[in-house]
Image 1 (tube, rainbow, N blue to C red):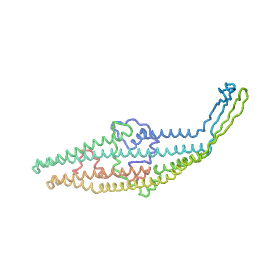
Image 2: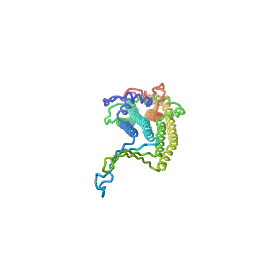
Image 3: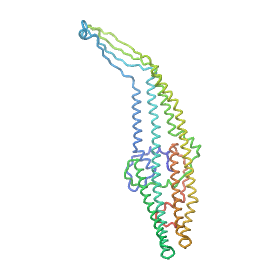
Image 4: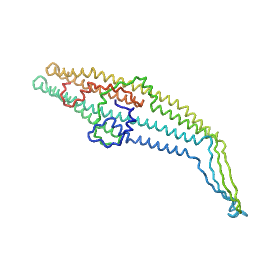
Length: 438
């Protein structure tokens, strides 16, 4: 299977720091996953956010501070209060007694936000791995296009040689040789373009873990397998476990905690103060104590409570909108995968084998003088075009498959359906190896 998101946790648990890729090393998709998970800054940023939220939770658990105070009265005035000896000195200690469950509400809100960060990190990781799989797929497809171009070059070379033999025998004009050479040059141009694209896609892939000079090969085996997937109704039920929807459960707890904190603000806190006062010229000391209660706390908290209630009520609407959007995306991806897989299967089982046999038969007929070069060239072009069509169908199918697995965050593929299509067996033959005239 191309993208095994269900095994991501195991990959992360077993991931170790990896060194640079050795020159010419074959890089598997799992290797790319490990490199990205170990190095990509998006995940480090998510870890940093966890540290920030943990610090906020620690701050939320702090009690109101004790306030020490000193107050000097009846000093530096006139008459009997003209000096320090007649001044009253008060030393006090005070704080605020929080009511309404404010400390518990603050702590609950901080903890809910901390819990929600794990779902956010998982969603980021899935998006990042899906992007890695897409870039790996692009690199594998570019390498396969190089192979198809080499196959086309090999058959065009055989056509040029056959045309020269007929020219020497006087059975064909020179224009046929020139036409065959032009077709060969076009095939070589296609190979050069495919080689440039393969290098660019590998560089694009390696950029995910910070490499600027990639020297590795990707495994194109993933393009050979298009396994069967579960029915749409089954996959749709799995959407409920998708991080995009699971986050709403955590977000609901966050908003409920925010509402509880807003309600606690409606209960006024009580300020208290206690201390000692030295009175006048003597050494008499008296106890000083006091409390303070602000008015209008409920009225000031009412807008915040209404806003928190509205946010909580809107969450279910947001969840339903996201669920419909995810389902629509899933339906589209599932349909594209099934259609592209059907196209690839028909090309494998019927079209490519038929065109291969037709090209071989036309080559034999051309050498015998029973077919024209134009007929042979056309069949050759159709055979290569069918293989390229199969490659494009496989790429479209696997892109849809990556999207399905990103949405569901699980693997549901049938590993037993891993046959190698005939077209791909032909396409992976080393360039220049005799394979008939297809």
